[in-house]
Amino acid sequence: TQDFSLYQLIVVQTALAYVLLAGLSPVMGGWKGLWVRREFPIHVARMVLNFLCMIVIVHSFTILSLASIYTMIFAKPFFAVLLAIVFYGEKVGIKRWAAIIAGFSGVLVILRPGFNDAGVDLLWPLAAAVIVAIMFVSARSLKECSPFVLGFYPIVGTCLIGLPFLLSGDH
Image (cartoon, rainbow, N blue to C red; front, side, top):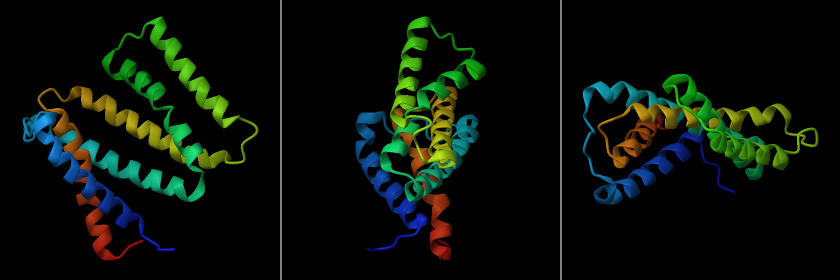
């Protein structure tokens, strides 16, 4: 088998994602809002969070099954709602809570607590779910950007942050 470093995976994946995103830019609202100065700190935070998320997910693939990883990531809506309540005072009705609880219950059913030998390793994809929830909720503060720009910064930022690690030869 071929061995690839963590940074090779991250840089290549995000570079390819950028090519696809750039090709879709006309139908995703284009470059409008890319250089809004007051929103830049949020974009930078989302870049760093996306990079961390990529590291956590790639590491998760080395210790857990694909099914376990994606099951834990499906807990993201639960965390996103909690964050939206705390940071934006979001009101969540009974129907939404019921849907969120049903979804989270599905995560628990799939994982079968007590019958899973993954244990503490499940904290890695759970951390990824929390990071993605933070990224999603923080995007709510971005008022002047298109859907293209929402994807642009995390993707390009992750590629640029990973590039020096890749070039240094760190694995």
